Length: 212
Image (cartoon, rainbow, N blue to C red; front, side, top):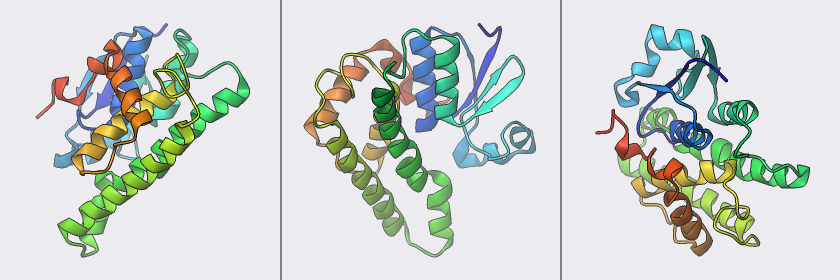
C-alpha cells in the first residue's frame, strides 16, 4: 500500500469527485490539494509540471504522478482490490467500462470549463454556451438510461458499486448546474442509493475544504 497519496483536486470537478469516491471506498487516506479552476490555477507552471494537460485530478503516489480519473480509479482498484470497482466477468467488466467511458469521454469533456471557454472565445453568447452544455448532458444521460434499463438492483449494474456509479453520480451534479433533464427513474434510483453510501455522501463537492 502506498505510504503517501496526494490528490490534486477542485471541489466542483466531477472527475476529481470520481477519484474521491474511489479513495473513500478503498479506505485509503490522502491529502487533498485544491486548485481553483476558475482562477486558472491549473495553468500555473508548478501544476503543469505535474500534469502537462493542466487538468484535475492528478494523484501523487509515493512521488509518482498519475493523471486521468478513470486510469487513477483502475490503479486504485488494483492496489486495493476490495471492494472491486470492475466485475470479474469480462463481459460485465466491458459493460461497466462502456458506461463509464460514455460519461467520461463523450459527455463530461464537452461541457467542461475548457471547452465552454473556447465556445465563448469563438463568439457564442452565454445562453448559447449553456444550451450547448445542457444538450450535451441530456443526450448522454438519455443514452445511459437506455444502457441501464435492463438492469435491476440499487446500483448501475446490480448489487455492487462499480466504476459506472462513480462516473454517473458526479455527472448528475453537473447536469443540475446546467438545468439538464435527469428525470429518468432508473438513474434517479441509482443516485439515491449511491448518495446513501458514505463514500458518495462524504465526498460531495459542497463538503470539500475548497467549496464556495
